[in-house]
Length: 168
Image 1: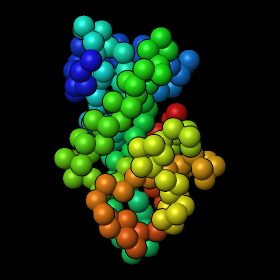
Image 2: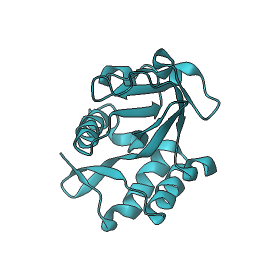
Image 3: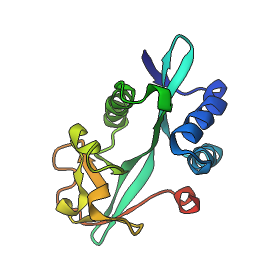
Image 4: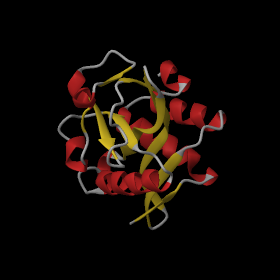
């Protein structure tokens, strides 16, 4: 299996992967909207023998604090075809995505996801930093990973996603 950047030829298959994993159209529409608006994305696929099995997306977000705002990455959606789940594909996508976010200069990544899954990658509830989500979600499902030590020091505020997320 290889993890690589998405290319235009992957777009339909990425939509299919998200439809199958989430049993709906919303995530695929979000991805297309972000692409269409030219948002700087880290969009990766897991591929084996020319077959795509998974996809992960990181988009720019920000933490709006009283003193200042900082740019971070937002993880999601992340999807693996149901027949390939629980085989380490999602983990491989997350690890590579984290590395790409570090290389892109992000100091942190926010995720809205399963509280049993994401902590194994270092994510912790964002409330421990005094950071909340702009959406009304349970505290335990909104997590953050500090990529650069100290990048969240003194930052307390609300994570703001790209406006395309408001449509999902």
